[in-house]
Image 1 (cartoon, rainbow, N blue to C red):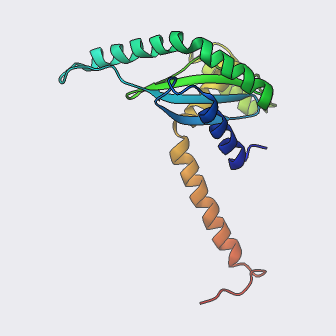
Image 2 (cartoon, helix red, strand yellow; image 1 turned 45 degrees about the horizontal axis):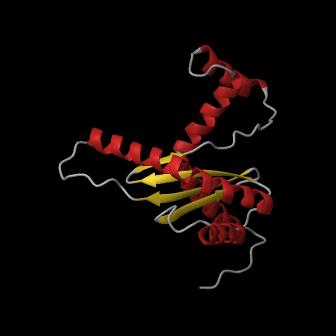
Amino acid sequence: MITPEVIEELRGWFAGRLPDDVYTELTEVTVDREEITVIGRIAEPALADGTSEVERTAAAEGRIGEFRERTRGQRMAVAQEAEQRFGRKVSWGVTCGERTAIFTNVSAPVMTRLRQQERKVLDTLVEAGVARSRSDALVWCVRLVQSNADTWLGDLRDSLEQVKRVRAQGPDAPPQES
């Protein structure tokens, strides 16, 4: 089970194990059953005031590429140690300015059973050319939910709180204190 303590242990381990010159700041460590993703901040390229957005984006992409090549050996050594210790693959990412890039990461198969109505949704996405296969269509659906996740999950949490309040007012509820 992935508890807040597990995530704290991972953050602490990576913060202590990564060489000081890899990231300027360790910004995010996420984990699931298959993978640990480590993202850190690197310094932005020095650019003059008034530099165009196109030039800023190109400079950030160049800096990210340079970082990826320069630190590959260090990151691979740390990943190998972490994979043995934590039993999960390690993926890396970097934030440079406003741009975040995730390097090669795990693409894990997930099996599910879908009823006909659910399969029809996937088939419609395939027929419309949105996706090449049912598998791609399912990924598309997950990404759609993910892009709206903050709002949707916030609404879901608010609804759960309302359900708890209504249940607390039911006939088996303990008396409310005033």
